Length: 202
Image (tube, rainbow, N blue to C red; front, side, top):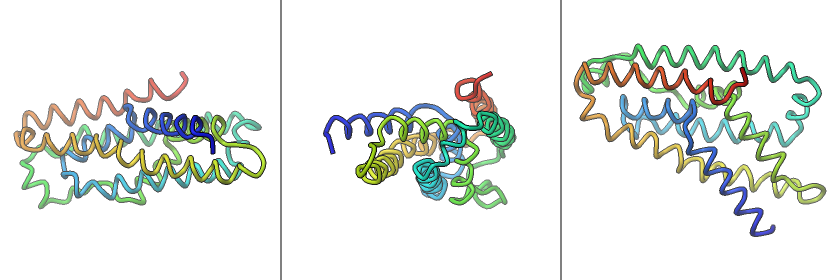
């Protein structure tokens, strides 16, 4: 496979994975609330979910959006509703001390919840549709190029989103204060909701 194509795939995977979006803001909040280790299933779920989504697009699901544009609008509505619910959950998160939170009922997102979220995450669809339409090769090279795209997003995506969870984890000590934590929760909830302005056409 051409080196320039590999570089293009890697660059696209890094830029789209590391830039702000629902996944990264949720990981920042999760890292701050639960720490990096407890957030690892959430990270793994994002990687698995994006890979599954790309596989579906490679197998032809993306063609449906070209044939029936209304499906993409429906996806946007479903994704927006779920994202707003998640933003509310983040904004209304606990403000007790870190140790008390860890002993309570609050839990980070599971891997399968994070994986399923990618199917209603407009940014994830943009990543999948954009990468497959831009970098997949026709004919006999289609399968190889598709596998390369999925692998690049898995490796680079894991490292990129881990930065956000790790950054949140470094804030845990500073956030062990109810006032600071309430402010952080509200900012993260508002920022998560605000990503709709970046990823959904209005």
